[in-house]
Image (cartoon, rainbow, N blue to C red; front, side):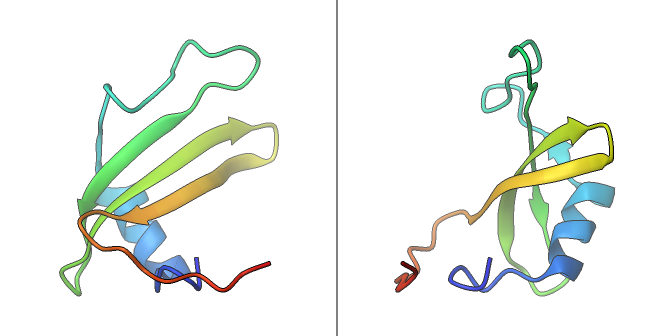
Length: 75
């Protein structure tokens, strides 16, 4: 998330107010369904966050700022 300049607060915003993109989601995937939620943050970022349900809650699989390519130096 750091490489893409996306905060936990912004992820929560999309979880609360985003809309499911069914073309990017895999609700029937076995054993782990995945849901792509998209929306705009208060700062104007257009994000897509992929969530997967787990026994302990939701897991963030990946987060993407649509239309922006960030350089990543992660190993």
